Length: 158
Image (cartoon, rainbow, N blue to C red; front, side, top):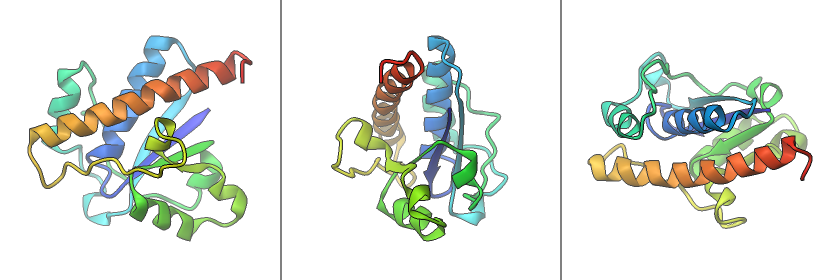
């Protein structure tokens, strides 16, 4: 199982989601890979935003080795699931899809918690640490559900 998270610059939301899920996978002993990327080329090669680093560190998650990268068309073949943070990401990803099968892999991450609602993860970039904390909690809850789904699939219960 390979899971990709997508946001704008790949230095806040998607980087946090990748770290959160990786931590949960390790704790659960589930074999899966996770990565993240974005659509804003300005941040390619950057490490996560200091506020994202701090909030993850607060919860025992180290994302300091993350390096931002762009979404690529080949990500459709390299990943089993692609989770976007908001509507602009969904449309950006869909614009690069080569087939309807590509889009079967794509969903809003918060649809794990609120199926079919297409709710957006709060973008903390222009805000304070409280915004990063709220975003972390949204992603943490979604990743809890994702761990349950992956665990059930790998044990043959789904």
